[in-house]
Image 1 (cartoon, rainbow, N blue to C red):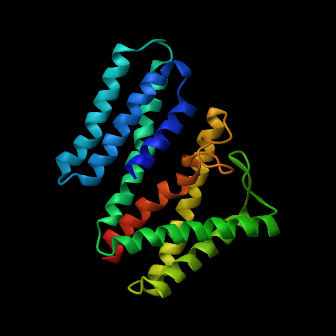
Image 2 (image 1 turned 180 degrees about the vertical axis):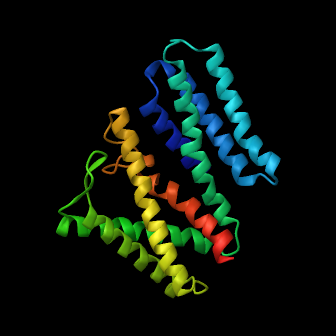
Image 3 (image 1 turned 180 degrees about the horizontal axis):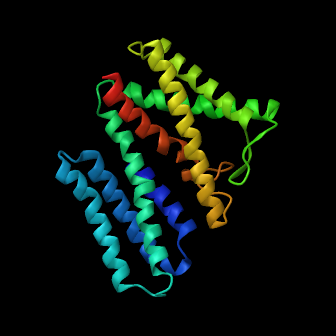
Length: 236
């Protein structure tokens, strides 16, 4: 997860920061990975907050002494800080989820639900998609495909219950299927929004034919936190 966080941050800052900010982007990647490590392994609230505060201080000071264009520095600084919020903060929930009882099962449940949602959304959208879901952000996505994705996510959760996660109740399957499926679609839309605002089609070319790593993680960035808080506050 830490390696994935670093690679995804690298892609994000290459999209979001101007070329003359490559050094700031590299330092922000380092700060983001450290933030992810701290968030995943902090043993108390003060250390948890410190995991966020220290990387933020680090970036603030870097821009203070390398402000370059005074008119654009606030925008670049905000982008660097946003990267920490968007990727390490969200992705660290995967590590937290793994530390729970049955953590391995929770991780596989997220992967099954998201993959089932993506797969059925694609095929239903291709076959029956007529009405655009959010054309300004993602022109190819349809309402029919989105509904098909929710059905797929519930089917994915059902497979998990029958195969390896028998502790889940039928209510858990329904809530997790719909909730994780819906938030995974929102994560996909958020990344599409960001890419459009940066004027790029893909976050990178790390995965041939599929774009960058961030294009593969976008759904999971929203799915892991939702599943973690459900497991801690509802399932327990």
